[in-house]
Amino acid sequence: MQTIRVNDYDMAYLKVGSGRPLVCVHGTLGDFRTWYSVLGPLSKNHRVISVSLGHFFPEHWDAVGDDYKMAQHVADVIAFIEQVEPAPVDLMGHSRGGHIAFRVAQARPDLLRKLVLAEPGGDLDASLPVPEGTPAHPPLAARTVRSVEMIRAGDIEGALRNFYEGIEGDGSWRRVPAAAKQQLRDNALTFLGQINEQRRRYTLSDAQAIRTPTLLIGGGATTGSLSVMWRVLADHIAGSKTAVIENAGHWMFEQAPLEFGEVVSRFLAE
Image 1 (cartoon, helix red, strand yellow):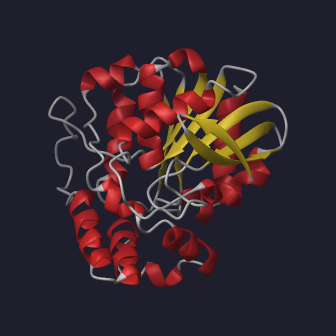
Image 2 (tube, one colour; image 1 turned 180 degrees about the vertical axis):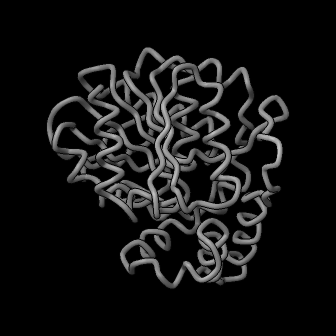
């Protein structure tokens, strides 16, 4: 683990391999360990830089303060990338980290060569309607609110199970490996910040503003809104490519690391 000073904060990161830099941004409850399962495949041809966002592990945040904001994390990733050589870099984000990567590409395309979005999180506004006949999905924000209530009541395990099973389905929590569960526990209090993070909805003009060559990846077994959003965005990001990791859900890089690594490496090599 290394650290670098960014916007008056020491951002922790791992750096593995050599070659063109690939900066990886984790999602909700993650940290630089999120990408462990694909560091091997991806580092064969890239210098993989896996970063922890502010207030995530190795920091043990006490949820005090008002600087846990989406805009702050976007600004931090931009400032981090500005210090990575050689530029431009490839950028990959998962879930909430996918939303951050999307906003970085929107704000600073000059920093990026290629963009990979693995089921980016967030919500669509009315200018990005879902295809007719798409089932209505309950918003994940409601699960987050419930998890926050459970954390405040002292039920960390219940809060994590509630959130995870809202994405991967009932009973999925018991199948999560111990190391992955511990990573989520280490970042549980970040839920308290996320509830007021001021995340903007994706708009049509946002999607059309992305000019960086983009790959959007989904899990073949993912259900709910996360299975829909990336497809809608792909329809409106010019020249974007898509890939599905069969028999994998939202945490597809953990569930099918070789397939995920191959898809990403192939896109970055094009």
